[in-house]
Length: 421
Ligand SMILES: NC(=O)c1ccc[n+]([C@@H]2O[C@H](COP(=O)([O-])OP(=O)(O)OC[C@H]3O[C@@H](n4cnc5c(N)ncnc54)[C@H](O)[C@@H]3O)[C@@H](O)[C@H]2O)c1
Image 1 (tube, rainbow, N blue to C red):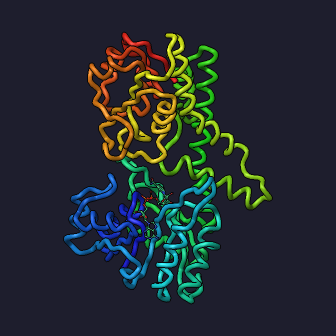
Image 2: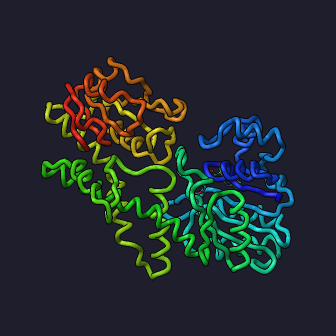
Image 3: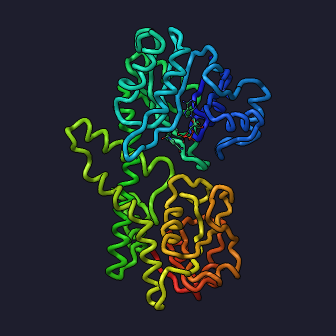
């Protein structure tokens, strides 16, 4: 089939390459001309697509990156995978609408359009559908099929990939659902039909909200345990031995990435719109607890310095890890960056070690290696992101004081004073 994938980022690029490898003729559209140039030269822009995979589909001519609305060829299937951020705390669907206009202008009778971007219930049917109808003059359901299939990609996860993770599929009517299911059945191992787009849209938000709320719970528990002199991680590990009815989550310096800080806000915002201002008290509270974590890290650093009669001004703080999750260089919404910024505001000299992060991506922050000298020179070392590549025994041996936000130094022999967040 002739497939157009609009948006060549973390979601759209792996999908486009997968479709090309499965024999479709794919055009990957993106408004970012530099990204398209990189892709044309075989430079992958996301870690889940290797340069070899990209080069192979480019060579075979089954994948063509392109920019500009003029580049849209005739298609049988168009997939939209563009950002759905927040603007001033409110869902911003401008990219989806813009992509919808581009697709709508080239939409032919009988084609299938699928939205993959995460959004609140009703987006596919009441936001994207009307844009496609207006631009094409065709009716959704009757003259073109329209579906929603949320992406569950976990960048960097080697076990659960696009192919192996069950894919939810839905449509604005039964025929659209069937068309959407058929398309994805050729790309992934298992599709899971959901009867309406609205429930599939809600399911995606629920998955990430579930994580965000549970992380907020353990983050608050960590504060309670600290204030009362208990070891929260030992308690959580003990609770996790229960073989049923419990799922483990770990406390940390806050939540990051594209999904967890954003998707719950979409859900609560939508609930408030749909119910006369009554959003979700639990989600809103979880957001507040998680958002306050970087400031809590800084409070703990400040408290330690106060025990030595010092303040943050002039103190040297070394952050281990800047990315929002281990094993990745992804800085999006990373709480470690908030910690760095808050420390700098109070006059601390902040340096950071993160072998996965491009130095150009972190302006205003000195990047260092984890050497004995750097560890010894720091007044405080904060383990913000627990990359496996860090030598935690060396950290425990060489640093003076470590605030361990990830529990990686627990149980290690240490000459450093180690506090768990
Ligand atoms: N990254 C993840 O881990 C992840 C996981 C699941 C779902 N999602 C969701 O998928 C959607 C896309 O996220 P992403 O992480 O791939 O974003 P991204 O920023 O990595 O990529 C989006 C791409 O879309 C392009 N773009 C924006 N507007 C466009 C337009 N009108 N036409 C063509 N291209 C356009 C941008 O230039 C960018 O390259 C979001 O709704 C996100 O919430 C992301």
